[in-house]
Image (cartoon, rainbow, N blue to C red; front, side, top):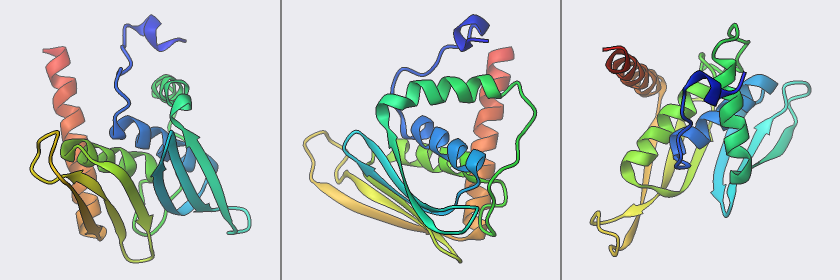
Length: 170
């Protein structure tokens, strides 16, 4: 069933939250683990371990594919939950985590973002306007997220979605 038939409007702007969410969903669906995600012109490149033989693979996610992948993700919400790719740091998989990280990037008005997962932490980073103005100088930022910070980030995202859901039904 088409998302538009359900009266749900897909977001128009290609936010990091939406783009990273669909990348996370694909990583979960195919069982990839231990990612290194980089924004490049026109989309994202991801290096991830193949679940079959744990060999590294390079995956490309062009921005032009996001509308289709996002529509598929919305349609899949009505289906039973599929198995998710998990690692010790991300027991809930990549979709929820990358969506939450994407929201954080959007809040910062970030660009040139990266997400690197290692055994004990995930490093996220990118560029942002230093003084918040459109003409300001770019500055780099980087955060190291460990288990507690990751769990908190995902819980915050779930609360935001829950609050939005309550607002729509009120």
